[in-house]
Length: 236
Image (cartoon, rainbow, N blue to C red; front, side):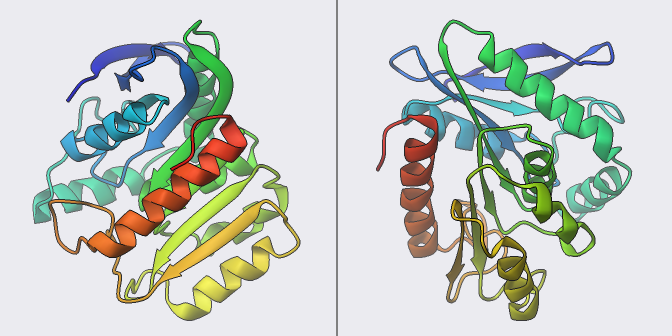
């Protein structure tokens, strides 16, 4: 881990914790990483470190600070149970304001170029989808975004560039739902989706099953190229 903990002011008062990882150059586009239901745990922070190494000023906010600050959960049945409960109880409109606060905090830094992206995993993918529908970032990437069934109409107001990664074995996003998502994005020239054969939900989570190294490597290259084009960072 090469980052540090920072505090970000919320728009309605108070402040929340986030992990900040800075690029080696000391300056770059901003990026907010939205974690899985397990929140900003060590794996999510390692993702921020990887993006920082590629030139992005990256933060991972505490998703549950309004309910249980510091609930950074482990990949255990109990961690999953708590994460699902906390995620289900989240106030989504307030979260979108928190995502705006993250973007504003990054933008005002002299070491940020001003372009801001969002990358979300699983539950965080749904949050990124909703945030983009409210214009809370300049571009976004989702990995195996879950729970989109009730939020498909949000696609109507997504104007920012969007890339979405899904695994063919992910029962949370079966082929019919994937096709529906693609249909919702039809006609948006800056939106693209990718389907990874043999990859399951969580295929990018290195060090934990069901990690799929080939799918993860390809998705990573695509993600870096996409963010590089739309945020002004480097490509793979």
